[in-house]
Image (cartoon, rainbow, N blue to C red; front, side):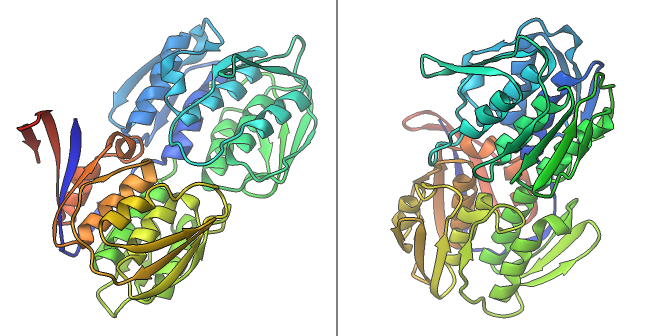
Length: 431
């Protein structure tokens, strides 16, 4: 068993370098399947989700190898099967991008329903609606495998998404890249990693316009050439460290970021009294200037406040006097972690999609369990505020999406380490 052990109560100071975006990388890596030549993908985060999707591509027959800790070489020209139904596939949500990539390249895809963070209902009906509109037939096998195929060429069409879905938007883009004619996706999601995927595909010779708006047009092409491409910085990782600095009343500089991608987070931190200074590729977060004020947030699709930073903000608001209200409008069950915060002494009540936080209550160190990736990061932020030792288990969730999280927090002055338990009373510590 592995745990993080955090001795909190100290403000964070210093600089942190942000890694490549997880949500972009796990879509761009399977997107290489569409290419007719090898590609090199740079600024890849060294996280378990990237390792998983890389191994899945290898199982399909692709040649995938690390050039260095942040670069991958991928040769998709030797893929031998469109059947991705192993346990590895079930282990991560982003594996569903294999559907769009394989269907777009080979007209056939059989992919196990994905796992990953388990909060709320994560239907893929909009993905399947898009594939079917392009001319594919889809069916569910034994409730666990999606089989999509098209006997002839996929044909461009007009698709309206009933809900704004990041995954469906990206998957339909992938499937439409080599379809005949033009595909129009209306009510498309606008997240930065959607734009990054479109930029990657366009760099290979695809014809995609409108990414970042609610109407995306994809004109199919016959050939995609190899490229070297660098993934954008991770806005959610950046937002996590920004929240941690504010929660500990510290002052840090977050480097290697795109400030525009963080506007909704910066606005809320400023509203709370945090001094935010933006530079070309960095942001300074200073929470030492004045006492912080309560605030309300509502998660929304981009450019609104990101749902993936909601738990981190709840952890921050726990330590700010006053009543704050969080409205989770994206996912229907993303408060599973709240019970862990209550164990720490937080006064939080949940009413449907609302979390009511009575901030400023005394917090105490307690053993907690990460319930998903972002909740796990929020546990670290909560622990950093508390005088005492907090143990965080289920850290595999955190390592799915945060590169070198221990090293980065330690560089900011945090007292945090990973503990390997080999028995009830036997532990080996690693700094």
